[in-house]
Image 1 (cartoon, helix red, strand yellow):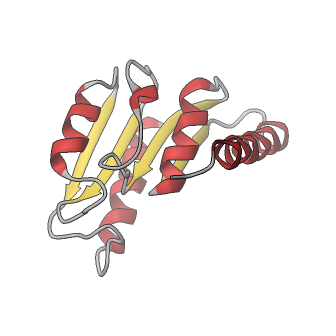
Image 2: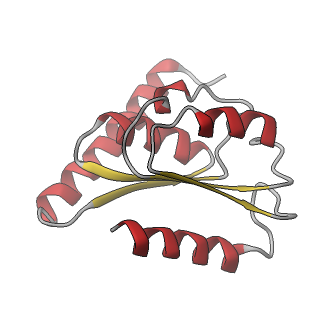
Length: 135
């Protein structure tokens, strides 16, 4: 179990990074993207902050982390999961995905584990194609 103060501090860190991006690139859309625990923290901030216009979660730990904050979020969202991800199994990811407002995409990488071992090229191409379509 993670300490609530640490979790809030991590949200603050994400907000500081978002502040920097928004000030440095004010005319550019900001995509909040994260992997595993970073997805849980980053998407929590991105879901509520209007400066983040697109959300990407990779290896979301939906089997062990509270992610209901994503329900009803109307931002374009991509979730990429491995079919062998023990921390984000299909039975936890699919209800989460169904609750997203959209536009949304869910991409399963067949046979990939939580670390996308030997599958990073497919992961990268999936994210690249989504961003090219959305942004």
